[in-house]
Length: 258
Image (tube, rainbow, N blue to C red; front, side, top):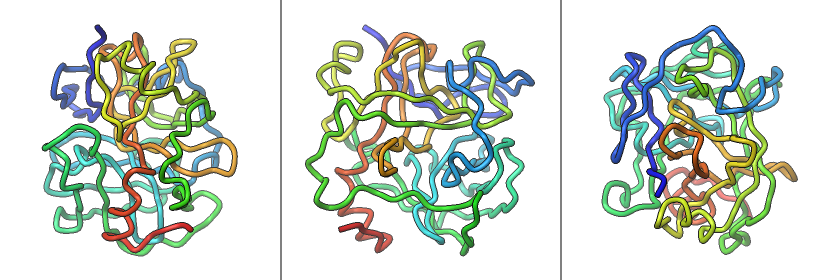
């Protein structure tokens, strides 16, 4: 059985994981990142932000409004986070905001049951440009949609195949699979999680946590990156299912699509 690992990564090279540990560090190479992804052109994913946590870890997030970032809850178990907006070069945001934990909102199910690793950051106002913009969420009419077989893109500054972190934003095009298919690798997957197929060795990896899984057609964020296989090469990539958390997001942020 493939082991699932969470993907928040410490810059000192120790990954925070519930079940296993990954090791990553900085690098100067652009090959085999996300793993087996490709370098993003400027403006490809303007909703993507980089997170540097006060505990030394790194992760990602997505802009869902001028004053809100969506991320993984396990990226918010720290005192503060510095958000980097508008640059594909890691930790070199055109805008940077440091936000304290009193502006973090973790889903109440996080830590109590699987499938609720999702959180919000209330941020200072950020204006939108061609390099900084929001991503739409699913409509409430899509709450029952499982998005199986949909093609999506996931981006981040996470681990290379050789265990180092990306300096330049990397993306991968992947297809959502059924939870049943995902369970063949992991044994069990919460209904409020979702997975993408590990075709051609593509996988999210340490440092990608909190980033967005966004559909190719009529771009909407359907997942939040939260786990991968041990070594990031031997199983599906895992995400918290956004469509199952729309009520909570609306309650806390007021953001909703109908």
